[in-house]
Image (spheres, protein in one colour):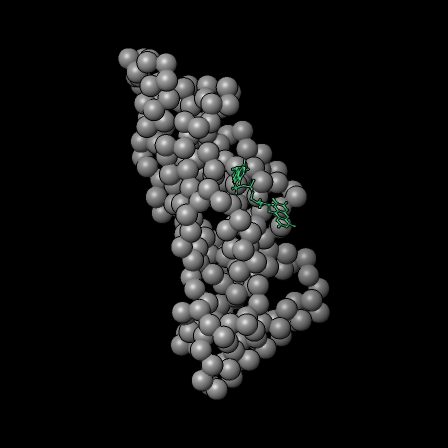
Length: 203
Ligand SMILES: Cc1cc2nc3c(=O)[nH]c(=O)nc-3n(C[C@H](O)[C@H](O)[C@H](O)COP(=O)(O)OP(=O)(O)OC[C@H]3O[C@@H](n4cnc5c(N)ncnc54)[C@H](O)[C@@H]3O)c2cc1C
């Protein structure tokens, strides 16, 4: 059994994202001749200010999240995305070390709470192994696996949808494990294309 921290990696974000958005958006006004150094940022900001956000749909970004099954269950509620997720039907966790995601509030927990969580995931792993030993298929043995089980999920969405996801999932109302993951991810988006994500509050 291994306990790891959740993480993410942006696996695809077009270098020329802003320029593509500018080229598409200026088609509406036939102002393509105004494209020059630095205009893409100004144009992108103008799109957001006027809520002309459909233009942001021309650029897609793919992110690999490594998180727990509880968080991934929430992520897949977002309908304007494409998903590819590690399958608990086809992966036999008895063939490799089973991984679990450390709760982000671990330090806030008392020793007693930490021990109970650890005992519970150890039991889940042991029971899973016993079921597999009884020739149970992984898709049936998975019944005993907890929300804390590690999963990997690749999410592809356009920039408009990523903005929506960050607005919902970085908010204080979001689940803490989800919020932490999306805040760090949004922070990275802000670094890469500041003008399109600057307005999203992270605190
Ligand atoms: C704090 C929080 C608590 C939640 N609690 C619960 C809960 O207790 N139970 C539960 O079941 N879910 C819960 N959810 C999930 C929530 O109901 C949504 O399913 C999820 O956040 C996806 O958001 P969305 O539908 O806005 O966006 P997406 O599915 O990402 O879609 C993006 C946008 O496209 C538009 N859209 C998409 N599909 C349609 C459609 N069919 N018709 C019209 N417009 C559409 C909407 O404008 C939508 O906002 C919670 C979410 C949050 C953030």
